Image 1 (cartoon, rainbow, N blue to C red):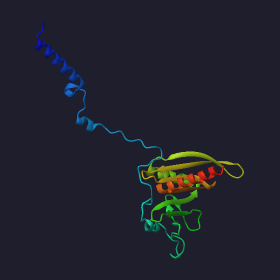
Image 2 (cartoon, rainbow, N blue to C red):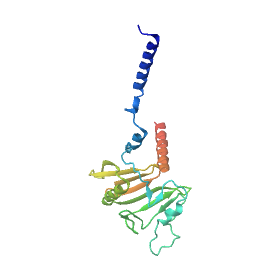
Image 3 (cartoon, rainbow, N blue to C red):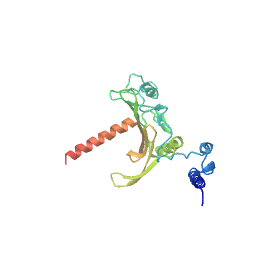
Image 4 (cartoon, rainbow, N blue to C red):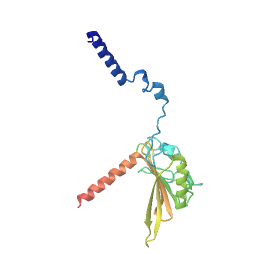
Length: 222
């Protein structure tokens, strides 16, 4: 017959064994802080079309107040034109036409088909940029921007002209961490004409509100 002290010792020994098992005695199965520190952190996978780079217009950021003069400096007047004309001047709505503007492979020379426009808010923040060009120019520009911003989200569509002939259209889109969105359409207003536009997060939100308002107005007329 075992003594009471021997029984107590057995109980204590069993308890120690169980505790040791639960806590992985000797840290044989537990990683040390050093091991955790050296463990590589998996790279975060971004959604298609999301860029790590900040989208800018030649270095001028979007939705940043007080960049009005910086945007005006990007505008170049044709030789012989005075600064008092409407070129390179913001109107009351904050819009400005930009002659002789160059963006990537696009070159807006005076009286050419390429047009460039920028728009600012009342606080001088850049919210919108648009420029057109040929379909082939837009495809080439998309390649250039892919090198800068990474792979875009690409969408394929078909459009047709007045006589029913169908044409393939590509849409390339990038979005940065601030919510600014850059879009290239290989076909825009005309079959042989495409465009690039950059919209700030606030501009996109404003457009979304307008669309919701129009939809609600339309539903109220049913």
